[in-house]
Each structure stands twice: as C-alpha cells, then as structure tokens.
Image 1: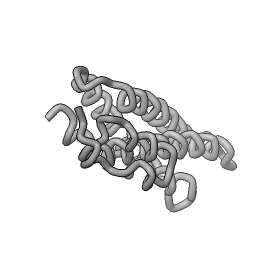
Image 2 (image 1 turned 135 degrees about the horizontal axis):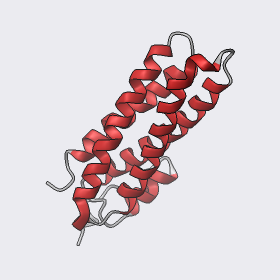
Image 3 (image 1 turned 180 degrees about the horizontal axis):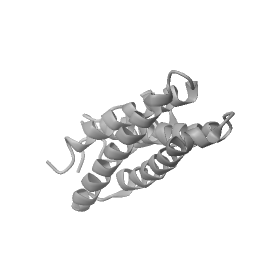
Image 4 (image 1 turned 30 degrees about the horizontal axis):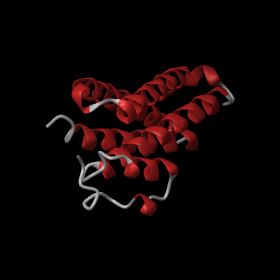
Length: 147
C-alpha cells in the first residue's frame, strides 16, 4: 500500500492529467514521473497530429510527405503509450517498458524529421520540441519502471 503522506499533493497539479496522475494510489515518489510522462505523451500526440495537418496544408505538401508519415506514426505510438502507462498493472511492467522504448524511438525519429524542416516551418519546430520532451519524459519513466 502506498504511503500517501509521501505522495505529491494532487491539488498542486496544473493540468487534469497531472492532478489525476498524482491522485493515483501508486503516485508516491514516482507519481511525478508518471504525471510528466502522461502530459508529455498527450502534448506530443497533439503536436504530431497538428504538424501532420499543417504539412499537408503547405504550398507543396509533396515535399512534406515523410514528415506527415512520421508525425502520424509518432502520434499513434504516443496514444498507445498513454494507455499502457496509465493502465498497465505493476505485474506487467515488461509490457510498459517495451511500449516506452517504442515511444522513445518514435519520438526520436519524428524529432529528427521535423528538425530538418524547423528552419522553414514553425509547426515542425514546435513538433520537434514536443517530441524531444516526450522522449526525455519516457526515458525518465523507463529508468524507474520494474527496477
């Protein structure tokens, strides 16, 4: 049983994701990492989806097709990872670890692709930043899962 005296205070969270994550009984010392990862995953999935749409709206979207493909793949992986992180029981930490590793790779690939276009397209710059934040948050959570 988690000692809630050591848990972060859910009322201090600034977003719904953070507040609900911190209210979870498992929150304890790792609660903040879960909350940060879930927020980064949501932000990244949204950024990738918006970036893909923006790429398709550019003057010559054919030059952005690889970016669109990687954006959509990364968004899908982030959504799946959100579900794994939010709902996987501790007894299945190996599944969560594998999903986090897949997400780290998807975010890295998407960030690298978007960084190639960041000088010309603000949406790609912002998407790359979201992907890097998500990559880092997933790495931090991965470091403590199933230790």
